[in-house]
Amino acid sequence: MKANKKNNTAEGNLNSNGLKTGGEPLTTVGDVMTRHVITMSPHHSFSEAITLTATHSFRHFLVVDKANRLVGVVSDRDILRMLARTPNLHGTSVSQFMSRDLITVTPNTRLSHAVGKMLSKRINCLPVVDDTKNLCGIITSTDFLKAFRSMQESAENQAESPKSPHKPHSKI
Image (tube, rainbow, N blue to C red; front, side):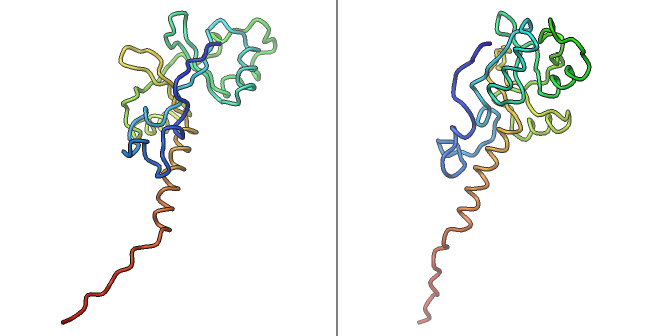
């Protein structure tokens, strides 16, 4: 298992107004993605995959080769399918149950486009890669919900703040 340590999640990138710390609105995947990614290799065992998901309480992990190129994604649903279909999991490696049909985005992908991909494909995460296909992070439905919560809280706080009193114009 490898950790790709950078900035953590969308919540760490937001100020109290639900905007990027520079004050701009959230518009791209890079604004809300999780940058700290723990990966596995295709050769890790099924039991190591179970341990990883249980230890870190996440529902997806990315699979990379020795050159750190993205080669697969494993979701909790992939693990459940393996449990249901395979009577003897001893000797099963991650490469045998990872999804290889990868749908990715870049940090510059618009959030609306990433959400559209996830909805149309009925998936809950997208690996984030740069233009040279290097792994940058992952964006999940949880990342979107955290960003939404922050923006919604900001909107609610603005709606609740007292309006500036409106002074009537005096007639002369």
